[in-house]
Length: 90
Image 1 (cartoon, one colour):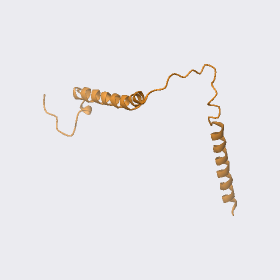
Image 2 (cartoon, rainbow, N blue to C red):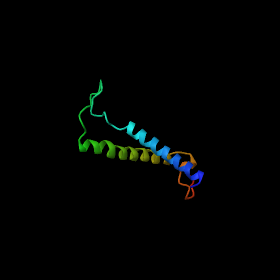
Image 3 (cartoon, rainbow, N blue to C red):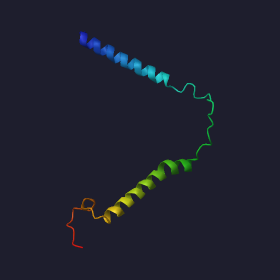
Image 4 (tube, one colour):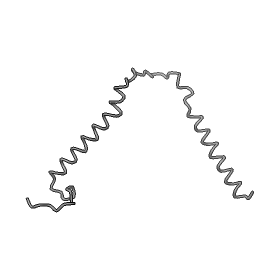
């Protein structure tokens, strides 16, 4: 093997070892022991979870989209209008 291949192998090994060490250090080994001031509340039900993480973002997206479309339609800025069709005189 050439010196370049050995250098690349050592570099790959060092990166792999460093990554493994970081993963082991950040593992949740002590997650079962409570810290001072740790007071978790009651869990969310399935309906609450779906409403909070699925329905609420979709509704928020639709509200922002609707407001943008309505406000752009009433704007005098020509860049916000549909430029595909010629604009008629007012």
